[in-house]
Length: 308
Image (cartoon, rainbow, N blue to C red; front, side, top):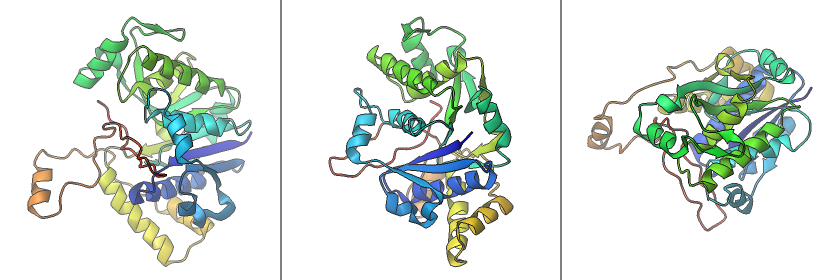
């Protein structure tokens, strides 16, 4: 069975484009031979170095506006990206955020998909007993509701959507997650993580949901550290004039290994400003606020996930 690895890069922001390159290379390094690699992007020229080794799925501003849906929710784009990739034809579909690096042979994960398992990055917390203010706010909005055939009752596990993977026979789960997401928002649920909730709920109902963490590192909580390391690795690839195969070998031979979670002290931004450097360029907190699309034919990327 074909394994279709997919990532998303829109807006042309340097850091996110660089991360997507290394993320794709890491998937190439560890994927089974019967695999293809896709990038959903509005900046296809940024990925020309890969040549025919990747499948570029170009989207324009109008498509991205449409993918945000009737409630203008940025993170619906991510789920639509996976739906779009699944519509290309039969395959195990493995979506990975650009801040994900694969770490070991993915054959086991792909075989599990073919057998009917589904994957997300990892279980994060039980929403009904969560203690953070934003998490409690989401639970208050959904507790006791029945939406699209799903009862929002405890327990309500929340999984991280840095990885979203379905087998060739379970593509319909993506459509079900989309219906649930739209239904929750139709009911007035407003939260940055409602897309993760919808996917977690639909995938969890199969009793086949597994975590992809053993195969990958998701560095959403140490973006600054990984950004520097990946810039260096890409600079080395460029200065050595490596082709894709050689770059894949380098990424497999010399993986970037850093702490996945770095908590900044409250005074870090103050010291940065005093030193004349301004605030850190990328928040390590994950998802932030919704970023509206500009009127022109440009789409800026949004921050990554936040465990709010």
